[in-house]
Length: 438
Image (cartoon, rainbow, N blue to C red):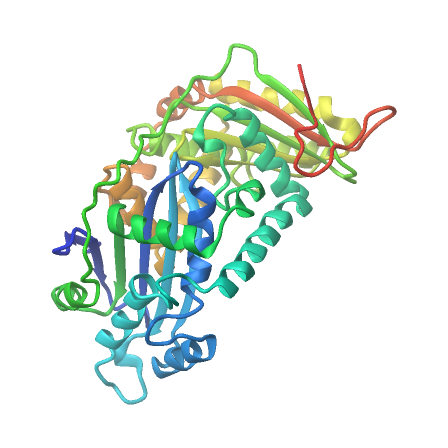
């Protein structure tokens, strides 16, 4: 199938267009690349402020009217990390022109509105509004607080922070509460003007569109001075320690949260990437996985048990929600599954179900505009060229030997357990380390 066609605008912004009649919407997404570092909190607050108003639509009501004039266009934002790179995303979804009640040329209006979100925010005396800054600082603080209140998400975050303690990857895409207080409208405006000018920016457009027409329009509406001189650091891939770190933290939880962070040696840049996807699917990728069957179904130890990949960093993360007294039993069973994988103990049923489930998930990915854009973003970031159909072909052709090879490189790095206080143990206050490591 056809896929994204990418080229640079005159100012260096990268435009990627995927012409397809599969969807009744046109999806536009913009991604600003930044290092994952002490600036992360500034990046995290930017999209919320940018969505509060533009020069042409300076208030929320004006923004709503503008979106209504675009036949109910919807805007939203995303924050995420891939390896040591932080992404701020702005997205807009609009009805495709052929599906409007009265077909009319809306493409340039849509793209102009979308461009204004990033290029022309509402400013007063050259700065973001103080009121908006205060409100969005509070909103970001609440988003970070919500992670603490969701103990599964909190445990995952704390495992990453311990596992990658000396790596920038330890940082959460939302930044940190400690950095929020020092931010003001002047600091944020200066930062915004800098990254808009210096950092990589990519625009993705997917829908029933003409790539050349999109390019010509974007050359006009996204025209602003840039020098693109920002230097983005490569992702750091460390080896697991000979003896995994053991971290226990105490909180008033009804259910223990066990997170085991493993290093795989492979990232999305490597030829072994697809074998690693299959490995994860067999180990803990669904209801037919080893973790689900052995830890949850047979031993009845877990409320949930699964694994996931952080492919940009080469990490495999195992998660289980267990009764606190079952910690050691659950760890032993999980260790057995890791060893079985490394020894090639994969049944025909496990192999077949994992492959079918993985292929089904790839099929579903092809039905989601946002997922297709993410695939293209990954391809650019990791120098890959596969279309979705080619990825499915590679999954189909995988051998057990390839998967077993990756399994032998999966090494435990950090075993994290969030549990309730017992005896003299005291739960630590939010924001403190409160961990005991052995």
